Image 1: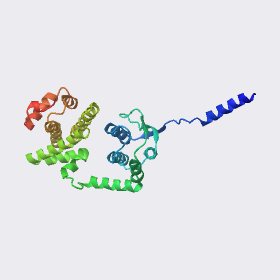
Image 2 (image 1 turned 180 degrees about the vertical axis):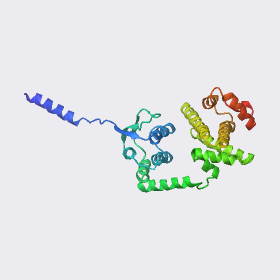
Image 3 (image 1 turned 135 degrees about the vertical axis):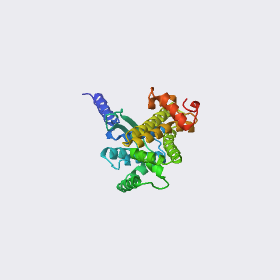
Image 4 (image 1 turned 45 degrees about the vertical axis):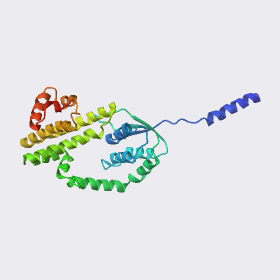
Amino acid sequence: MSRSVCRFWLTASVLFFAAPAYAEPQRIAGVNKDVFRTPQYICNMNPGNAWTPDQTKIFMNAVMKDEVYDDAERVLVAALQKESFDLIIGAAKEPQFNPNDLPRKGSLPPASRAALATGLTSEAFAAAAKRSRDRAAGPVGNETMLDYYLRTGGEGLEKLATYALESPQKWGEARLALAGDLRAVYERTRGDSITDLVRTNSDFKASWTTRLNQARQIADPRLRDAASWLSLEAGPTVDVLLGGAVSNQIYYDVLGPDQTDTLLASVRQRLGVPAESLGK
């Protein structure tokens, strides 16, 4: 073999071995639903990976929500702490939750990486568990008893109905509290973009539907009826408070096309509001 040919192959070999290796994205499978959804939610508010301190806290709260730091969460958090990451995040599959994988690439701000490193510890999980026990036992901080009822699911809604039946004044207080809870859901994702509008309507519809379903599951007929009417009144009350912002389609989706007009007529009469004050 000639010297020139040898030099060619030597040069080619050096270039081949010196060429950068392109690693495949790191795949993290089995991430629970709440944690999986959170990067999507943050990205809708703030495209890219420039998480704010509040958004970092939202993610950390999602990880700590079930009070268990599982293997998938540990791997994901470790990856997000790196100076740069290239990830494919896969959700833990459920019958009603089977989303596409979530690609994420780039880096988080140094402050976010530091918060993940120092905030997701065994001590933090223990403190979160204690807060959860305290919240389950009764109102905490500045919370009212009605606030406590509203965050304790169907059992709390039954207690809210019991409270409401004590007097017309307490009925109005219970209705406003329930409407305030739904309004907070509506305004949490309210924005100017089409994506914000779709998310807002979807979240509000889901929360209102959940309250109506909780009411229907109450065993005591008297309390079931009261909780149902409170829940029915709460949605239109939000609409009135927001100046008719809730779309007509939400009413038809939640109440059913065959019952919407009849139910809304009854609710308008109970609330004392004109037809033009609801929907758009």
